[in-house]
Length: 373
Image 1 (tube, rainbow, N blue to C red):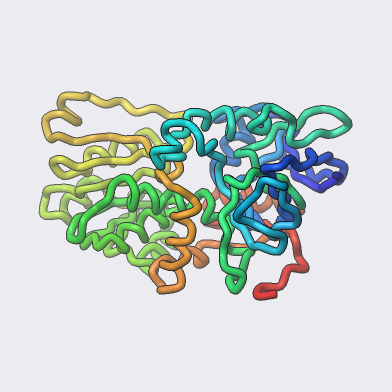
Image 2: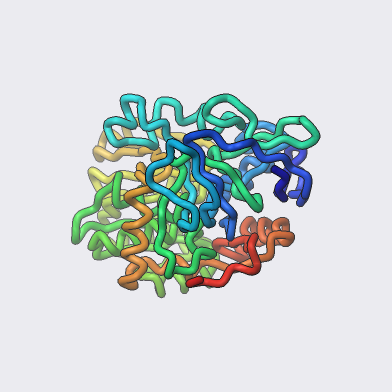
């Protein structure tokens, strides 16, 4: 089956829209999805420019939303016409999947970051040559074939164009707080970086009952949005020392939890310094940068911890519907971070994401889609 897709030919190249991409045929566990829209994530940019590598040429995208067109004979939970959000693939059979921790699937890397399908076959080809995929999904396409485990069913009355980023950015930020850090009502949290992941973490802190939700960024407009979405305080770290400011806001103690989404060395290190005794910092950005930690003085003396979190320790089939319920109740207004672009504006959208002009670019792949129909 021929489809249209955005291809990155070599490391650092711009996206090129191509109309002659061959999509792999369906298998018994597969779901064919007509793509309506997809978010652009900083992970896509990291892979495009080579901060992380799967292989080239590659079709990126992993925040897709669409409508089921066909299902394989073994598919049990989906049928044509269902609206779905796509997320990462987990095998469902290894020890960690059976324990309910799909983000720690023992086959996670080979299934999501190897560039091929879980069975080792090519997802996409061009003139017989392999194109690497991402997350067994590659949502920068007009149509894709995924496994049932990639899919999350979502309500048809919601605007499908807005929902795709729930499958990665929003579930990663919120899940880091709700599933991993698990603050209690009355705790305090600081979020460094107010992009989509950071704002999702911040909103989750508010949902959890944190009495201080501190947003840190260098862009005033983003900090204003953070306050609109529930931050109790906003710090522009270009204008003041964020660690000192956080300590001042917390009676000199620091916050119980911190989330860094910037991947900037000084900011990640600052997230640790801003912690209260016993505090935990989750550094979750896709970044080539490292941090320098004095394990005794920076961690042990004050019983602090630094952790990594993959995809918010989420189970997408549980967490995405939970976020939608929060959204319906006005507690998780993720749509305020989004801006729509046409599919052929992908390079402009990606540049706007990188510059901070747009928090969450969303590519509209099916311009004929009408919400609610």
